[in-house]
Amino acid sequence: MRAQVGDRLVVESPRADAHRRTGVVTEVRGSSGEPPYQVHWLDTEEGHDTLVYPGPDAHIEHTPGATGEQAEGASRMQTTKRWDLDVVVSEETEGDTARTWAEVGLVADDGTALRGHGMARKHPADMDVPEIGEELAVSRALSDLSRQLRQVAAEDINENTGTPWRPS
Image (cartoon, rainbow, N blue to C red; front, side, top):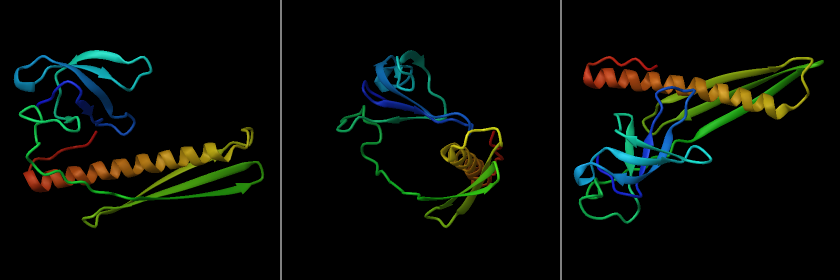
């Protein structure tokens, strides 16, 4: 891994309930662009600076127009794929209660098709704000889809390397 000042360091989360972290490299302390990096994190309002030794869940997004040896991967091809999600939300109301269901579908380029499901319910004493039920149901469906996608990745890792990986 090599970076230069201004590149972004992205750390993916191994858990569905945590977000990826993105920061800007403000100083490279290793030789030839290697770690450690001083990073200004962008996920807090006031920002936060730390010295980072990136792990296997991290990658560098180079500044557009980067040149030379510092722009690791500049000579290799970059591939972009688009995965579209289909989100369907439905609500059923009975008296003072309501249930909201969400289904999130994903079909990848390789034919992998997954569906995540989520549900939220309104207690009779709760205010009637349908958006809250929709947000909760969709977030739970996305979480379910995320869990399934990690399982597919674990199976692919095992199939291609012979080494089992258990998603957390």
